Image 1 (cartoon, rainbow, N blue to C red):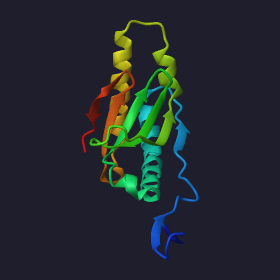
Image 2 (image 1 turned 90 degrees about the vertical axis):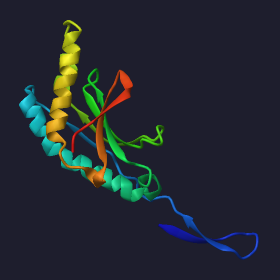
Image 3 (image 1 turned 60 degrees about the vertical axis):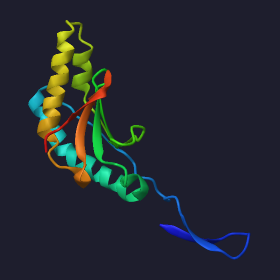
Image 4 (image 1 turned 135 degrees about the horizontal axis):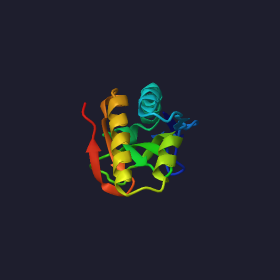
Amino acid sequence: MTTRCEWSLGNATVDKPQMPTEYPKPFATTIGGSSWDEITKSLSQAWPSVCEATSRYLATYPSRARHADRLRIYIRPDSGTLYCALGSISRRTMYAEVASIFIPHVESVWHEPVESSHHHDLLEQIKSALSSACKARPANLVISMVEFDDLETEVVLPA
């Protein structure tokens, strides 16, 4: 989307990018259930909406779309939320949130008073559910997972 404008110095005209009039809203949902089969099934049903929100964002911001090469899923078990954000391996500062998925079961399990290995097991269950549910690749992006307490380690989901 461009606008023709004239500068006050001389009669030069240029095509100037125009900001979108409507910004894409991130997709947000809550997934109920307390069994991992139910959660995985609900994630599978929500995933097309995440893909659609990603495509909508990329279409609205073509300059950012040139740099985005992955959809990172930030896992925050302490709040029970998965944040889906566009990113780039070459531009570590790129963060464009396109979706958030709240899973109350994850939050409640995380805050149960148990031994520390329980947290590791919960993260592994979340990763397994994501690997099973997130099969489609929005705009041919790499899909990866990042744990909330280790933002340096990124695990790429198999295609």
